[in-house]
Length: 632
Image 1: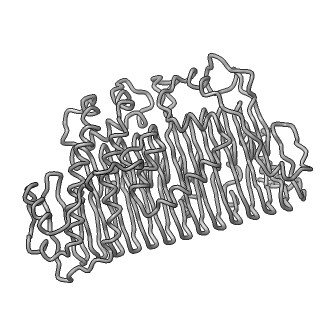
Image 2: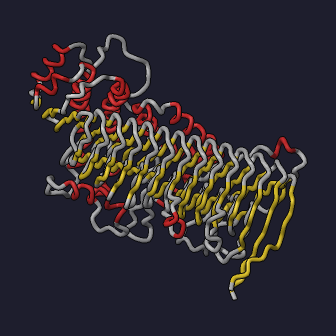
Image 3: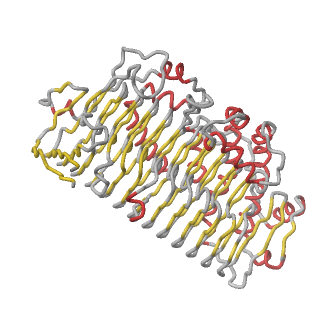
């Protein structure tokens, strides 16, 4: 029988800042409103003992300036939000994080003719003839307004140029693969995914090609096509004859289908599908790109309440894909990876309006990327997201995953079935491959970013989530506004472990943390860094309620940096002293690394850095509660 006993109830007007085990005088409120400056993490030491060579320049900078994680979180959210109506800018920003921006911004070159632009029917007809496009039936094509014909041909023209660039990216990689049957796309996926699927490898060609991937070429090819994706929004205002029944264009890069306003059923990936309206049903493999079968694959659905019940919608395996749905209450179901998955590719799922459902029956979806970028952007509506692990803004090695939801009261993995066993590594998370105990080929994690800009939202997750990272990863979570409800069992809310970085940023609203979580499980959360990592938690304002376990709330664990700050509001803190990490401190403390710690052999542990643990709440009429549990 469990007895839950409330041991302590204290009303606090200004909670002291605790840095390690030393209290800081709280008499000067102006000084205490600022989070203390954080020291750098010794990246040279970390890479020396781990042999990592897959870190991005951004990661390196933030290891040297961990105090800027909150600023980076806010800056990333602002950049993505400002670029919400420009898919090309969203792609470009993601590639910039990788240090691989190309084809984007800079001083324009005078005298350069605008490419892939057709002014009249004669120019379109000339291009069709020159590239030997076969149109079926031609009578239906002729019914289309000039604006749609123009967009279709300009998109194809841009794709042809992008394919030449993309081949320059792919062919050197393919030369290093062990694949003999190039007709099977599954074999390509299995091969490229090996490092993150197999814990102990005996063949290493799938690891050898990682640093051979020239992501600037992928970025450039993506940018050429994304410029045309920017223009698809104008198609919603074009009047289409009701009698238009659809047509097909057979091109050198694959088929282009233009469907009418009726309810259509589509069961295959093509170069481009433009659907002009209707409540449509997509199944099979939709907007799924793979170099062996369909290197580029795009869907633009202008309106209707659509169902995407597909194998891996909006996925790119050594390919470039995008799924755009501009109106309607839509449902996205993915059986394997997706919606929004990239493996040596770039992908985007973009939903402009409606109350939508996103469901993935497997891991790696909802903006999950390895060696490439994956973006899921939803601009409005009350949406529901349900996923497996490594999803909702997840970054694997050399990957950037960004999930951005602009507006609406949204639900993330918060259905009843997820409360008992929610997925891990979701909602702004990153993970590397720590192979020190197996084959020795360790790989740094990537960058996972989650952004929700407004609405009263509900979040549920397992471990290493909601701004969580593991092994040289960078996980970022940002919520701009709303009264939100959060539940995560452990290692979450700005938690980083083993040479990682994590940031959690909540700008406003009266938020509740872990009230529904299983109290016997909660531990290690809220601004904690373990083993030469930095985890930063920042709540800007609101009357918030925190429920947490041991070793939580501003803990620098094993020479890590942990910072918890709540800047404004009358908050309540509930510490459940369960059996998880029993006897460990919470609310601002440090523990030092040593040779006996249970995280593997270290050739050397520096004694000049003991870590930093900060608890900072300097405003409001706060309350603290402490509970102990006994099993009898």
